[in-house]
Length: 275
Image (cartoon, rainbow, N blue to C red; front, side):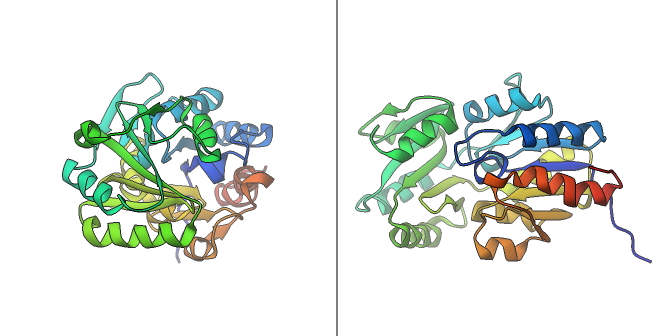
C-alpha cells in the first residue's frame, strides 16, 4: 500500500505568487505562513529577485532559514551570510549581450547586490524599484560587470520579440547558463546552477528534507524546474496554462491570496492539520 509523504517544507516564489500585483504581502498570506510554521512545517522563498529585494519579505515573515536569490544563484540568510554564490560565466554575458545588441530591449545587470540599468524610465523600472528595494545605477556600458554578474535581464513588452530573443540566447548559451522568462516581459540569464530546480535541492538540504517532503508554489516558466522536482507542486491561478499543466495542484491567483488558500486547502489536509 502506497503512502503519501507528509509535507515538512514549503518553498515559495515571490512575485506573482507570494505577493499580490502591488508587490505586497497580504495579512491573509502572512497569517497562513505563521500558522504553517506553528504546525511544524518549514517555510522559505526562492526568487529571481536580488537579496536586497527578498530581505523585506524575510523581515515581515521572520524567515531565519536559508533563502535563495537569483533563482538559486545565491543561497543566503537574513543576517546577510552567503552559503552559495553562482555568477554567470563572463563569456556568456558577453555572448547574450551581443545577441541582444540590436533588439529593442532595456538591459538590467545585477552585480554586487546592485542593480545597473540602461534607463531609469518606464513602468517596469518603477516596479523593479519595489521588487529590488533599491534604485538603479544608470550606465551606458556594462562591460565592466561581465565577470561578476549575477543576473542579466532583457526587458520588453513585445512578447513575441522577447520569446524569439530567448530562443536565440538559449541556442547559443543554453548549455552554459540558465535562460528563462520570469515574466512575459522579463528574459533572465543566470548561472547554469542558478535555476529553481537546483536551488530547491540546495534549500531542501539545509532543512534536511527529501524533495518528496517539499511543497513548492510558483507561477512562471522559471518556476518549472522546481515544480518538476518537488513532492507537491502547486501552480498559482494566474500561471500560464503550460505551467499549470506541470503542477499537481492549482490554487487561486496571487491577487486572491493563492498562497494562503494553498496552505489551508492543499497543504494542511496533506499533513492532517485543520486550517
